[in-house]
Image (cartoon, rainbow, N blue to C red):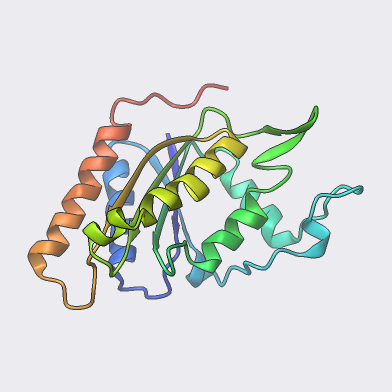
Length: 202
């Protein structure tokens, strides 16, 4: 299997970056391939262009989007790693989805609407927030996010949403014990979901 690890955090030494590294190492130990896309390090432009919007004419995508789609063409698993800001993913990740997973990659025109193009592939997410877990649950922040972002992206593109692991209460100065607990859960999730999965069939 091939995993695209898509990191959306501006700090190179953040907990999110460590989660991305841990996940990549875990699936590599399973003998699987990893492609890391650090959106801030790439200076990815998240702004959808007028020419990229589907309409009467076929959308025209810029070179950065076309290159990204080529890199992701044979990916089996998309792993999103990001902090939750204002109860939503960072703008750079939303813009990445808008531009890269749009018409011609994630879906295509179909009778009466669109047809997914990524059926059989998977989506797994790891998110963090400074808010404690009980607040995220009680306010439905996480359930709303997974419904509006994960489930909608999965349904539109045909992706199977296999998990969304969220780590709340992640503030600067967390204890080493808390850090190690997060890392252990990331390793466990990677092994649980992908150790026994065969590659995607054509």
